[in-house]
Picture 1 (cartoon, helix red, strand yellow):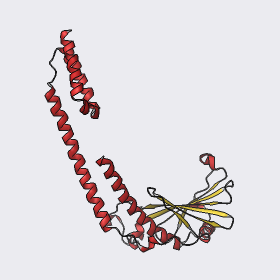
Picture 2 (cartoon, rainbow, N blue to C red):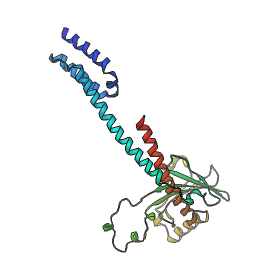
Picture 3 (cartoon, helix red, strand yellow):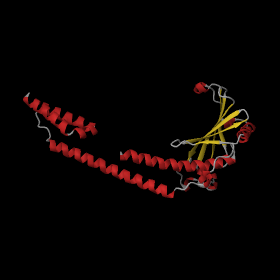
Picture 4 (cartoon, rainbow, N blue to C red):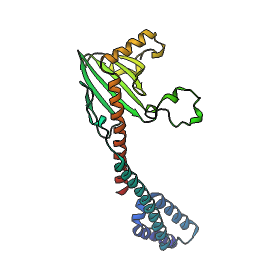
Length: 259
């Protein structure tokens, strides 16, 4: 029992001397507790305090080195991006009238709003820098459509177009995408009840609709200003937003690691 009491006193001493390390390294603290308990049962002398202190010092040094390397890389990348960044004139201009832009810092999407007669129209836009992912030239057959796309057209703007005729009325929602100037409709939803969309019939596959009906839906959104002019503006704006948000992300992560 005297040996056990001595071990318990040693545990108390280690906890006091290595408290900061144990607090920051709960796994090490748990392992130390198990080792001391095993030593009490087997009658083995616990490791001296200077060994534990050395372990704590080594762990702290390794953590500082990894943090320093990450901070250096983040800072270098942020400085490079800031030096090479220049906001294009197209992004500085406002959207085509009468659209009103909402662009919140830190958000991936932007929203454009306008009125059209008795309708309230909102277009939520999200930018995909490379919708096709990584490609190799050998993967594309000669003469494919990909050959005709320039570097910018590999990017995609996803659009969600909502049309309301009053806040409490049903909503027409059109999901679309654009890889350049043309707009491709993916789906048309009609929501009678906004609070129970998951249980509602969401409409047929758009490509299964009659071609004339598809064409009329495309004319429907173009007549409301979702056209080539708007898409051209969106590509310039969203490409610039992607760059601004990336620099902001680098800055926020650097600040977090530095704390």
